[in-house]
Structures are given as structure tokens and as C-alpha cells.
Amino acid sequence: MKLIKIIKRMKKALAITGLLCWVGLGLNAQQLPLYDQYMLNPFLLNPAVAGNDGYTSLDLMVRTQWVGVPNAPNNQVFSAQTRLLKNKTTVKRSRGKSVMKPGRSGRIGLGGYVFNDMNGSVSRTGVHFSYAYHLWLDRSQLSFGLGGTAYQFQIKKLDFQEDEPLVEQGIYEPVFVPDADFGIFYRSAYPNVFYAGVSVKNLLQSYLKLGNKSMEEFRLYRHFYITGGYRFSFSDFDFEPSLLVKMSSQLSPQMDINLKAYFLKNYWIGLSYRTNKTAVVLFGVSVKRIYFGYAFDYEFNSIMKYSFGSHEFSIAIKLGNNARRFPWLERY
Image 1 (cartoon, rainbow, N blue to C red):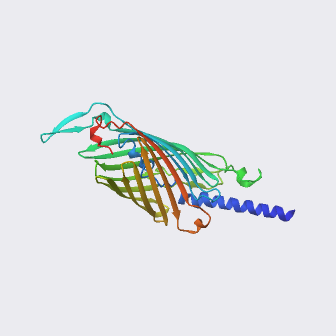
Image 2: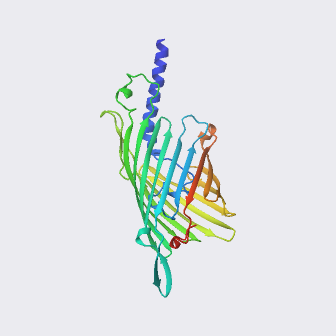
Image 3: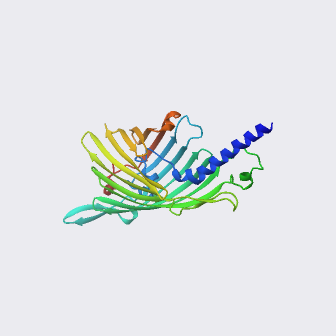
């Protein structure tokens, strides 16, 4: 009996050690969720994208990572964004030509999302709100965005006794975490669209205060995202290479190299390579104003001995495609 108790205590000690290693070290590696289809909804990476294209968009994305691995990460996020526009436009003359430009009332974008992230014994559930301001520069648009995030961070109780030190210290009590993010986004007009953006999340680098004062405080680190791409438009299809660079103060830069093709107006397919040795295949279809997407990624490392890869599903609805009301956007 005494041996069994010793074994149980060893298991608990190992579980506690692993949990603290994840919070103290592993958390730095993936403090924020990872999505494959950010190209379909860049608003998740950059608050300046809110209302950028003039549509009212509703997006749902669900991700299951490392299928087959117990307690692997899974994420769900639902976002909404829109542009505050009015019916009338302002007509000005430039070098003898009539040019359609937005009035001041057409420059504000609003957006937000709710999210739930699970990673082993750690959960993160919260909301995000964004305000964007869009400036029209001849045949391009420059946008600035500021966002605020608030979420509950919690560690699930493991199978410990109530008198365990970590239970007594309150490490399992939920923690409220506020933070902010900022972004800049630029894009040219359709049909050949160039876009680029930079954003920073965890701007305030909030602390996770776990347990009583004897527990160490764990800091969130700023995450930086740099995006860029060009959409070549042809008569039968569009072709879009793009790039995403992710980095933080604790991690070396990671890069996504993407290639996406649109054909028959309603279909798209894409390939992506992530420099952590991950390959991604994605495809989708649009039916009127509804967009369906799927992505599968495979990691070329030892974890794939136990996993069937990662799967991600998305569905989006775009409303308000009356281009005659807002001709300056030249939306696509």
C-alpha cells in the first residue's frame, strides 16, 4: 500500500512539474492560437482590417490540432466586422476628371470576436473589440486599427487532493487578463491587389498572476505579425502568393510561404509551408454570399507518429455587396 501511495505521489509531482513547465516555458511558445486560414480572415491577426473591404462579415473558424493526441490544442473563434458607411458619396474633380471619394463618415470600421482556446490543462476564453480608421489614397487604402482584449485564463484541476500545495495556493482559480493590440494595413484597388500589414498583439504584456504571492508571475509576450501579398487577376482565374512572418521577444521568427489560386469564380485552393516544418493544404468554395473553407496541415516531426494531422474548418457570410453605393472601395 505504501508503494502504491508513493507511485501516485510521483505521478502527481510529474503532472505538476509538466504543468508548470508548460505555463512557464511552453506558454511562451504558443501563447496565441495558430490558424491556417488567416488569409480568409486577416482581421484575426490585424485590427486595422476591420471593415477594410466595406462588407459586413461574419466568420466562424474551428481548429483541432494533432488529432489523436490526448489534450491537444483546439480553438474556436467567431468574428464580426463592418464598415460605417452612408449612401451618398462626394464627387471631386482632379485634372478634369470626376473622381469618387468617400466622405468622412465612410472611414470607420468596427469589429470584434469571441474565442475559446484549449491547450492541455489550460483554457483561454474571452472577447476582442477593434476600431479601425481607413484613409483613401488615390487608388489605394491605408488603415489603422486599435483593439482591446479581455479573457479568462484558467488551469483545469487535475486529480489532486485538496491539501496539495498548488491547490492551497489557488493556482486553479481563474485569472482575468486584459490586453491590447495595434495594426496598420495597406491595400491597392482591384483587380491586381497588393496588400501589406504589420500588427502587434499582447501590447501591454499583461501578467498571469497564478496563486498567492509565493507563486511566480508569468508574463505574456508581445507577438508581431508582418503580412504581404499580391493578387494577380486574369480572365479565368486569380493567383495570389503571400507571406506571413511571426515573431515574439522569446521566439525566433517563423515564416509562412503561401500560394493560393481562385478559379471558376467560386473555388479556391492553396498550399502553405511553415518554417517549423509544417505543410498545409487548403481549399474552399463560395455559394452566393456564403464561403466554406477547410485546411489540413501535416508536421514533419516526431509528433506525427501519434497524430493524424490538424484540421481546420471555416464558414463565412459577407453582406452588403452593393458596389454602386461605395464605388471608391472597388471591392473584390
